[in-house]
Image (cartoon, rainbow, N blue to C red; front, side):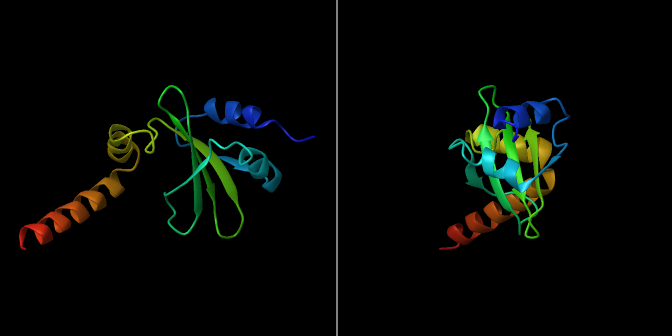
Length: 115
């Protein structure tokens, strides 16, 4: 018997933010029947990512690596919810990416300003 996706999500939400729960292929298939899971970006960059927003502003993050391993964790801030959610996610949960985003933004602004 396959666990209902809400059971899988409930189990993940009992863990600390960012603490992954390894999933089977069947569990991934069950989760992805929920249209709330949307394609996303994340690390590792070569993996496939899906996110589902939670009503309280948190988000579930499903990561499927190229070798087929899959894991689900929750983030304190859903980066797809709003610009504020993205900023908070980058600053608190992925600060190494915040630096990259700021550097890229600065480069674009410099380029635009030189025209």
